Image 1 (tube, rainbow, N blue to C red):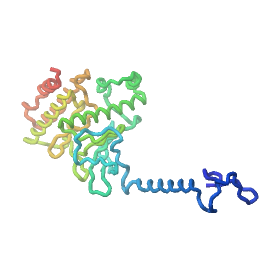
Image 2: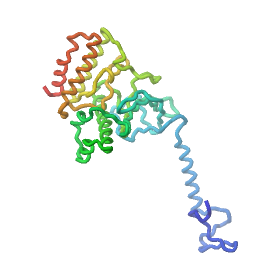
Image 3: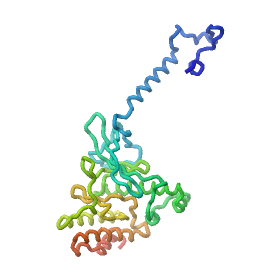
Image 4: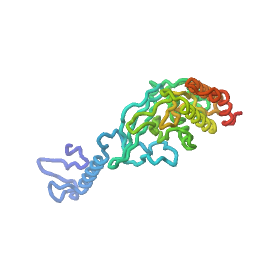
Length: 316
C-alpha cells in the first residue's frame, strides 16, 4: 500500500525533508510504529489467527448447520451431534426424485471418535421443481397474506418458491409430531430453508435400508409388516393426518421395522376437503401390495381399514 493510501499516511514530503503539521504526531524514533498503528497491527494479526483457527478441517465440506434453522423435537436421541465445532462431510447421493434429492452426510466432531450418518433431503430450485398434483394437497394449508395465496394459485416464481417452502415445513412438522408420539419415522434433525437433515435409515457403511417394494416377505414376516403398517396408519389418523402418497416405494424396512418416509404432501384429513379421499387412496395402495404378496383376505380388507382410520380421525 502506498503511504498516502493508508489511514496512517506520512506527512507530505517537500524538498527531501519531513514536515509535521503537529509535533504531537512525530514518532519518538524513526522506523517505529505509532501506538495507534501498533494496536491495529496487533488486531490484524489476531484476526488472521482467528481465520486460521476457524478453517475447516481437512475433508470437511462445511461446519455443522445445527442451530441455523428449525430443530428436531426433544428429548433428542443420544446419537445426535449438536456441538458447534462439528463438521459435515458430503458422501454422495442416496436418492433422486422429482421434488427433491437425498444425499448422505456424515456429521463428526473433530478430535473425537463421534460421528453419525444423516440423510440430507434437498428440495430442488424452482427451475427444476416438478411438484405433482400439488393443488389438492395444498387445499388445507392457508397463508395469511392474500399476495402469497395469489402467487401460489398462479404458480409464479415467487409462488413456486413458497410451495417448496411449504413442502419442507409440512414434512418437518409432520415428522416432528409423529416422532414425538412414537410413530415409525426417521428422527427429523433440523430444517434449514428447504433442506431437511434426517436420521439415516441404513447401516454404518452408508447402505440405505431397502424399500418395501424391493422385498418379498412371506408368511409370518409379511403379516408382521402388515400389523406394523396398520399401527403406523392409526398413529397418523389419531393426529388427523394421512400420508397422502403412500405406497410400497416410500416405506422402508430398517432392522425389521417398517418406517414411513417421504411426507412432504402430508394431508390434514379434517381441514383438507379431499382428506378422506387421500387417506382412502393410501390404504388401497398398500393393501393391494400386501394382498399381491399373499396376505390373507381377512386381513387385507381395505374398506374396513379406511372406515377404522376415519373413525380414529374423528370423522365417523
